[in-house]
Amino acid sequence: MTSGALIRQARTRAGLSQVELSQRSGKDRAQIARWERDVVQPSLETLRELLRACGWDVELALVPYEPDPKRDARLRVRLGRTPQERLQGMLRERSR
Amino acid sequence: MARDVFDPYALLQALEGQRVTYIVVGALGRVLHGSDELTDGLDIVPATREENLRHLELALDELNARRTDGKRLVLDRDLSRQPVLELQTDGGELKIIREPEGTRGYDDLRRRATREPIGRGLRPAVASPDDHARMLAALDREQDRVPLQTMQRLIELEREFHRGRGLSIER
Image (cartoon, rainbow over all chains, first blue to last red; front, side, top):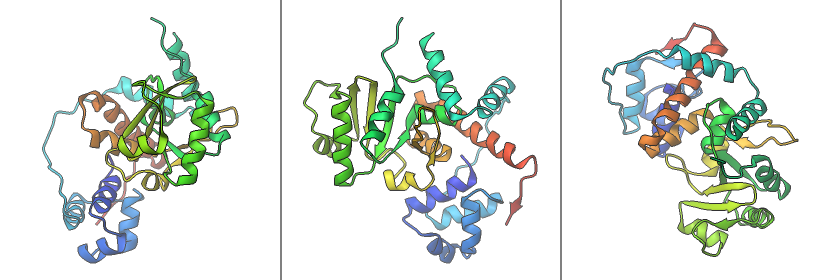
């Protein structure tokens, strides 16, 4: 999940408009819109301020992370395909 | 073992033919965004306006849709009573979801959905990758852990692809 999706989710769950979140958090409305669209990313501190202004927070904890280059390579190939090719590839795979 | 019939083109053609307003969600939506899953069915979130439900009813008739529990299908009643209406059709499984977990239904998903060309003249509206991740996260099921990680990684890879390595951090 992106920071933008998290902010949007917190805001909509709280039933707030971007203007209302702007008033609550003291952040510029246009900037909130840019964060929500993932045009730019807020700092972690700003992200938490915004979530808290919506009545939510995130629990942060370190968890082990292992890169999976094989999976990434597979997904990159699929991202290079059109939706039609992805669908037809899945249908071919399914019929094997 | 042979898999059940699944013809997403037949299902989507029937929906488009009857001018049903809907958004594709679930595994097929994720596949269209690049996820490497296999699926046997189509999941949709319809607009719940009365007129649209009439169109949907016509499409379901055309697809010979029946409830998987064998009970008679009464669309508006069943949709209002069940969060997920599971149907078997001549084109395969079709799930109709009024309000997927983590969302507020059609109007919520519509704003970020995109039309994806899939051939045969079809361009169904598909929920955004972010919304797919949001729905999986809200379901909070063990079976969705890998699809959720895949969607999250796809979102990251797509962002990297579009922006290169420079991510702007703004306060």
